[in-house]
Length: 215
Length: 268
Image (cartoon, rainbow over all chains, first blue to last red):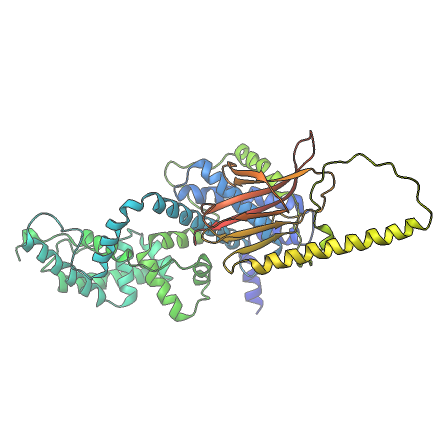
């Protein structure tokens, strides 16, 4: 019990102490200013890293702090304050993306029909793979369809965690450390999964694909 | 199958995943990502989330950022704001905070009919009247109070009738708390009725409502408000965040801000 209390206290950051002071009414204006100064850089950087311009990031960071200020009295300390701040910024990011994509969809109404066709193609299964749809004739397309089906089957035959590691490594181009963090396993486990996946896929896909030695 | 025709596995797999992404369901809420990180999701939900993370770059990045926050690493070419820029951002935020420490949201107070503002009347010159007998004063007071009471009751009744007439898909927002900058969320697809209850209404000859985009401060609407009620038809505002301000106007003076609120318009 003592250990868990000590570790939970140790996990708290400077933000948590400032909030405690703010909630206790110890010079709240100054407390909030210090919270702002502590988190403005990371919040701003979060939005810039997501591809927003510096001006947009300023506005979004400002919106984040307005919301923090509004809800600070509801923070109960069940999670780290860092996490709580991040959650607010991430929700604002999501809402902004959603708003912008809605506006974009409205502006590109003409192309919706084409998009619908693409979605229908995708939902039919694997009959129209994207990467091989060249003008190489029906035989080439047939082979591509076959490869697509075989690849999907081979991937589906892997255990779930191994399959996810392969997808994150190849399709998302993530590092071992990042895959381990996302899947909440050790780096060694990720490496072992990728090694075994390579062996299994080699046996099933050697007839259809080159460069099976992904790392 | 001739070896020369074989495509490389990694790009083929990337293309396959790209197709699968189109079939991804909605993103899990940020709260679920946080709960997953904290190990607080039930096993089944955790498995579903892992499947989603494998396919969804956006959620995977959010979760990786969450692990790093607040020690994020700047992307290439990105610089951190300077202390002067942070200070400037603080200065810009100050007026928007208004209240240094918001208190817990007060319970909605019942509508107080006496606060229903009387329609602005043009000033009338005082009329000369013969001085009344002494007993007339209390009688006049009783009569006056009865009239006011009946009027207030009538206004209250009208309001109730208006409420009952509201179609089911029209949201009614009562803007009552002046101390904070309350935030309300509405759907762009539905109509909304905003009813203001400013504390001070004396001396204003008319009232105006201003609607600004929160980020750019661009004013998308400014117009008179009658009966302290503003009707927003469906799809009147594009999805986004807006600041609404009710102004009171006195002759020859600058408009005075009486009430403000933040309105988040959802797409659906």
